[in-house]
Length: 159
Image: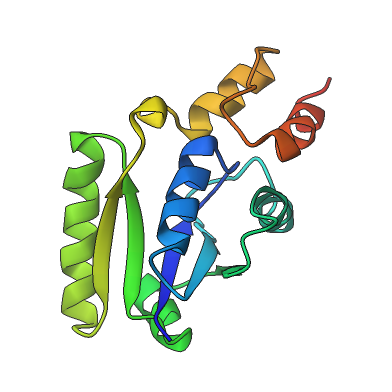
């Protein structure tokens, strides 16, 4: 069985994230969507809320498992018996950062590979930060996030 890990903050999950999840899910027997605890950031949504939104967004995808982790990604992947890390790329700026991370992860664990998947062009501009800013200002986030969580995000930003 080939297992891969797709890590991210998913604060919140966007249609860009979901696109990568769906595409990676057909490539591997199991895809572990891993919500990272990043102590240098203050997330808008709790870990539990983010996990719940991802689960709602991926209903019907039978080989997806959603969990959270903290610590080194390669240690988490090894504990999950995953030898692949999936990363989505939107632009050259993403590649520069992710390339450095992939090289460091390879130095830490030679048995774990990083695979890059280019985002669909429809989502190349999209980020969780943009979604939060638009939602907080009362703007329309339809088509930016999965329909199943649209109301969850709107509720978070109600006055």
